[in-house]
Length: 304
Image 1 (cartoon, rainbow, N blue to C red):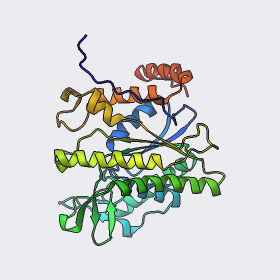
Image 2: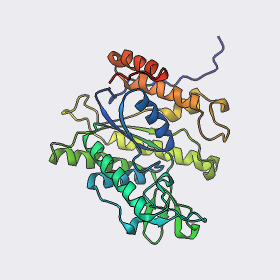
Image 3: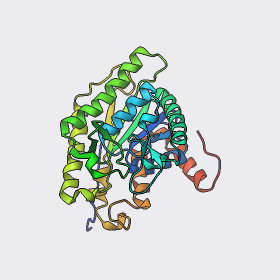
Image 4: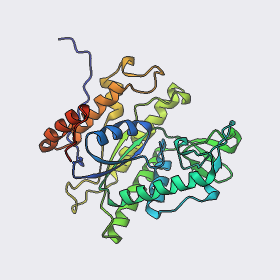
């Protein structure tokens, strides 16, 4: 029989998720697509409390802020450029932008407090990285999550190295381990990393591939330097799910992309979510998942 696909196979997840888990999802808009589906299917999920984050350093910054519960102040408020007079911050996606700075601060700090509480109690963290390209605000010497349409002269474009990506991910793992060691109420955490299949063609085709390769190598380096933890069940602190590889190799066709030819279609996101749950969810919870999928589609009660 003629084969028209290259199936991406991987061993069972070393970390896994369960309906008993509290999950935090951070990263690109692809993580939001998957996170919304997990929530629809009955999982306890908090999704991107700062909005979409694309690069590893921005993800690290968001984790540090949740751990410190460092509230946003007027100093963090930035008026968006290009004729948009709303206020936001360099730590947020523009979905948080508000007409008044005070309103932005109220909403941002409320979201921070809720996220910090969920992060403290969650035991699984799923991080989807979108790009290793980032922008540094020159005056503040800060890698931003969003440039907020400010003038280009305020920023310098940089590409994070493999080592910088690995260091950011390792720092997240280490910070969580340190907090769990000193605070009995802080849940020990396990991590699942993945790379978004969304193409960043503004970086050019070659630039996009270099960016994705840097992320993949950075994740691999972080995983290889993360020791097995005998106190945890399972014993592994982190694992990698090949979402990028599934889209690039198994679904290698533009019909799986939206009209912009960069973002995957909803059908693709559904397929990736199905593959992820088959990979990460234990066999004895698959029937509950099927019940919840049927219930969601028919607007019925979800089984927790």
